Image (tube, rainbow, N blue to C red; front, side, top):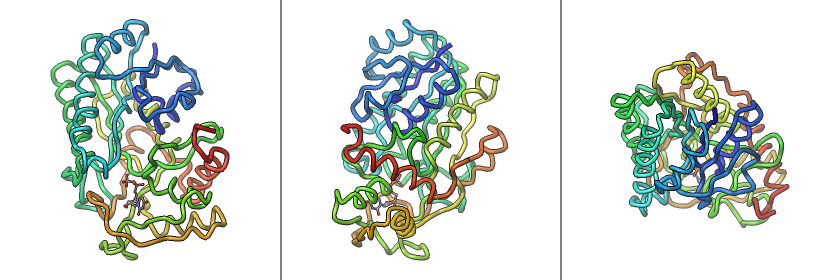
Length: 328
Ligand code: UDP
């Protein structure tokens, strides 16, 4: 049986495809290549199209024997979601509805979902546990929460079991050096810092230094993309073994401020990486750090590349060999 990976040509999707292939899984990728890259898909069968296109999805489900879906296809930028929430509701929420309807039509009963710490909003507790309040501070997080809730009702009505993985800040690149992070435009902290180190930008802008954190800059929990991929595969195994629907955090449990990330990147790259203070970006919570205790206990997951130096080094290797991303 095959695993369908929607958004499998994107950053986290392509790393998960690589790990699935390494484990001998049959992989089918569906990606509209709006943000994904054909070259990032290292194997399996790639279908270019949109999950909202019913005829396209019929072809994907009819031509393959799919027993599980890993669903990445979505927009994921906090800032953009505040400017254009409709884009997020359309692609993320309506896209997931279309996917779940097709899964139900074709009797596919397992889905692993790419969720986010942004579902929590300003945390009640640090580190955040899965039972904490969910009150997103941005439209992106709100759509991901709506997608999770939709899955719950499809489980109740149709027995489609889901594992929702709420991840914190994905970073780093694959050990093979063949795939990494390439967003256009790039908005994420670590790749932008590394573009400064490659002299492609003059400086890094720090979005706010008046947060209630020790150095005033936002604190995030950075997790290696391959550790995220491992969790998706464990989640598929759990569902194949008859596991119940569940929600898990994925993070290292350790937070770094924007200033600390820049400092580590200076050490890793040997570049001074000038920083300029700017206003807050709307929608950013001050601190997002995960408790992944439940994930470790129930999925048997353990992050194996958990030092931020190591994560930034792997990203740096990719950025140096692909200074223009997949265009190289
Ligand atoms: N950030 C920043 N400058 C940038 C990009 C990001 O100061 O050029 C900050 C951002 O405000 C947030 C953190 O870095 O506090 C991580 O942002 P990113 O966009 O990488 O991930 P997010 O937390 O939004 O998923």
